[in-house]
Every structure is written in C-alpha cells, then in structure tokens.
Image 1 (cartoon, rainbow, N blue to C red):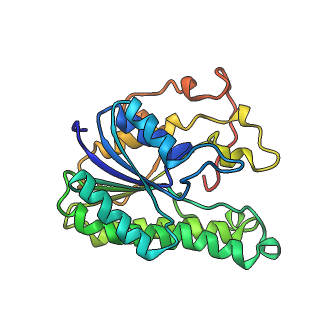
Image 2: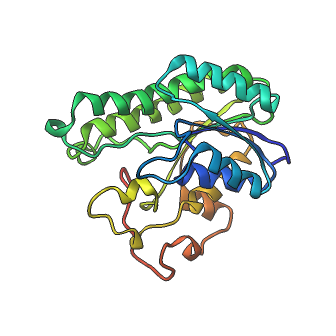
Length: 269
C-alpha cells in the first residue's frame, strides 16, 4: 500500500472497523472515519474523535466526519467532504452494520428498518456515492464486511431479519463486482471464521469472548486484500484463508486467550 492511500470507512469508531483503520494507518494511509458517534455512547466505547486519535498515533492521517448512513443526504455530503479532504478516494470500506438477533415474532418493525437502512441501504448508497471518486482512484477497492450467501435454512430460522440484511450487503458485492469489473474497481467481501471480540458482541447474552479472536485478524486480512490488484473482484474472503494465502498460518496471536484451540464459529460458515 502506498504511503498515502485514501480510505473512507463507515462506522469505524470502534471494533473491527477501527482495527482495520489502525492497521492501514500503520502503512501511512489517510483515512476518513465516517460514523454516527460524535459524543461518547452510554454503553459503547469510542467516538469518531477517539478513533481519529488512534489512527494518527498509528502513523496515518485521520479525518473524523459524523455521518448517519441512514440519511442519503448525509452520505453524499460526507463522501464529497472526505474526497475533498483527501483529494480523492482509493478505498471504500463498508463496515457499518446493525445487528439484532431475534426471531420473526420478536423483531419489531423499528429494528427491522434499522438493519435494512444501515446494512443494505447504507452499503448500497455509500458505494453509489463513492463510485465517481473510485473511478479516479489508485487501485480502487470496495471492501464490504458481509458473509458468503447460503440458502441453508439454519442461517435464517433464528434471526431471519438480520440474515436478510447481511445477505443484502453481500448481494451488493455480487452485483457491483460485475457492474464495475470493466472499470477495474474491485468489489469484495470479508468475513471472519470465528466470532470476533467486539463491544457489540459482548452485548449479546451468553457469549464468552474468551473463545473469540481479536479484531486484528480482520484488519490484517483486509490489508492483504486491499493490496491485491483491483482486477481481483467478486470474492467472498474469509479472514484465516486470506492470511494462509499470505503464508500466515500461526493465528495464536489473534486469540483473546492465547493457546485457545476451539473458537465460537461465526454465523454463515
């Protein structure tokens, strides 16, 4: 990655998004953190400003822009502002996501709409707004954090609405990869093999994060993907497979508890 790759990432104030941003910053990237959290959250750590500070400390150049990706006007304005600040956009990372693991009868319309608005609509509209800048970018990539699609009913029966929303993100990857293939804008997805220890995961009852991996495994995988030529598009990458392709097979450093052999598997794999 060049010393000044220009990266726009949604929802990167904490968790996997922040880990990816920090990892790219270590290579000197310039990064826009576009997330809703401008002020400290009551229960979740991190704001766009604390994230920007971490990115700067890691060696990158950060811009903190508040953006609610449920709002089309805010998306367009924030993409434009980010492109102005960085003099372009080379990489878009669709990281922002809403989760609600409830069955059909326990999913209120408000929660359904939130997941569709953030996950599907947000991914589509943010990608749409970024494409004109990516067309002019250096080795342009869109990387979306979404799973490979399986129609096995086991992935739907416990949380149909959430699965629809995540697969909607994946369908954006499939469609846009083909749509922009001739323009050599890479559109790929990345998903973890195991559960990843994040603040959002800790809010789910019954999850023991001692059997999870750290967000850094996703960050290292993302960097490898983004260093690939933009002609490589339409792939659904899994974090450990990406690392193995680069010769990294000892993953113990990514374990929350070093030495752990059995991990909580993530959804959809």
